[in-house]
Amino acid sequence: MGLAVEAQFHVLAVDDSLIDRMLIERLLKTSSFHVTAVDSGSKALKFLGLVEDEQRNELPSVAPETNQDIEVNLIITDYCMPGMTGYDLLKKIKKSKSLKDIPVVIMSSENVPSRINRCLEDGAEEFFLKPVQQSDVNKLRPHLMKSKVKDEEEQPINNKRKETEESHSPDKSRPKM
Image (cartoon, rainbow, N blue to C red; front, side, top):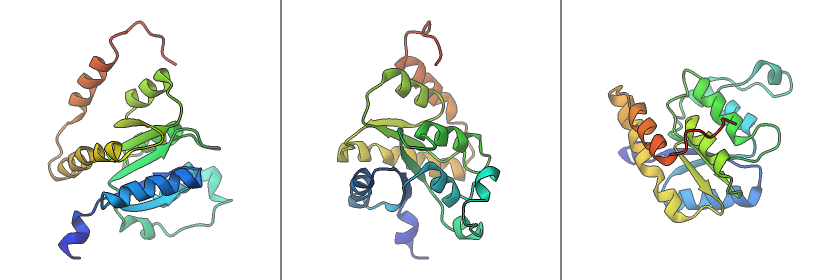
């Protein structure tokens, strides 16, 4: 393994729209990310080695080793997808012991504040509105660096995130969705 390979971050992009998937893939590659693109939340979970029991029958089984040697540094997912939404994918990742530290970024063409807040409150690092711009992709690096740092020295970064979330939502009386 050369140094160049290790310096390259691996992003898993999840979007049911081929055009959006190609766009995000091109933006990420322009920023010299290594990209794996899949078209559904269940394929993303399968790639990450997290397959649910009820889906096991219909999906061709994949040897778990195939995914373990590929470290995913960040997941960027569309919110609106058939079957499993980006929000469902986020919750499954944050519930998983092995994957919960991977930063997740949600993107959507709909600007729905309550949805954006819910995703951020449940662990998403960012919420991008489509079409995703190069400036959005540039915001990903700090999250990647954070996940790298977190691996090296298990430090609680969550406190910082909670503070920023509270400053984002001054209206505490808002009912939870």
